[in-house]
Length: 323
Length: 199
Image (cartoon, rainbow over all chains, first blue to last red; front, side, top):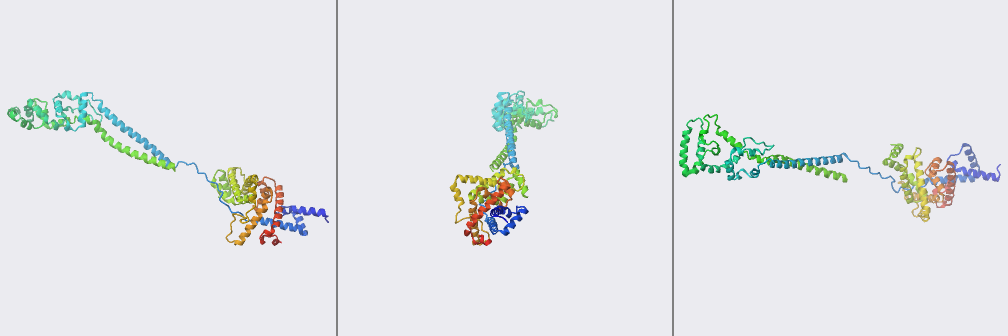
């Protein structure tokens, strides 16, 4: 039988372990001792009941509602350059480089062409006229200049145009003379030349359209006398009867100089071709511009296209970068 | 994807995976903070600080109960908040003395719950909260962790950085103190929550 102190100690011992007893944290022997005491002690049983009631209320206590979610903000990943952005950057850079390259080629072509056209003109006196001729239509050539050129000896005049060689358009060796100053513009020339007394011969040269005729000399004499008669008062008419300016340009002084054989004599058509080629002589002065034009046009188109691409991809890069 | 996978991903810096863990444990973490601190604003701050700290130190998690690990962190955050409150006792007193018109702010009413039951539950929550406020911090923390959050003694000891024997002792004293408080406040409790009904 327990005394009063022993009984108080037992109550205190049980009370201290009721919490663990409720949580079933006690060993079997201690649990059995407590259960035995609870059956015998109403006060300790009441303490046990109130403690279980307290824990029950604490568990029943309503949980407060969440005021908000506590998830952490997901940091935005470092913007990795997307494929589209990289492609736009690359395309912009490539288009810019190509544009600069094409512009460089364009500028080089323009400047280089002009320099080449100017440099070879060693003869200063011909530099201006040739440029003038190049700039102006053939009809603009002054008759006086044409006449002077015509009067100039062919051998001396010939080398000068050839001294302006153009890589783009090599000059034909036959492109001799200034005489080329275009037949239409040279038409007045015969008027100046004819009075000098050469036209009878010229007419004679124009006459032998049929080289087979051996009596060319006689017919020439007749024609010469006829034209001489006409020249006194109808010089213009006489010149108008000149078959072609070719006759006036023919270097042969007389028809007798024409070789007797037809094969040896250049046919009028051949002469016309030679003249036609000669008429192209001034073209060398037009070579720089004539060759630059067809090259410049596609270059401009390419430049405009590349410029458009640069602007387009550049804008794309800026827009994507801002995003 | 299970919890361990989310933990491993979070340990590699995956915030989205960590947020999955947050969604799973934010309720007990906030509830613990609210029971310990006694007011919603401080509990919210402590919960937020706890999850930020957890994300920063999740590499130190070496397994075991992730909930216990989180509750240990929120316990530390609560201690920090309590220190702040001690520097401002007026605010602490106001926080502990709940508004009688709104004793348990933020409680959700169950769909099937009648208005009377909801009101009685609110009254019980307010009474429990007042009883917890009378306990020392350590006892309060231990009782909340074991009786409300259901941690084992070992996990609770780990959460409050003490040993199991101390937890047993603190818990026993805390329960006895809360019981004494509730017995005194029994007449204020709704009839169905009174001790007499238990007998």
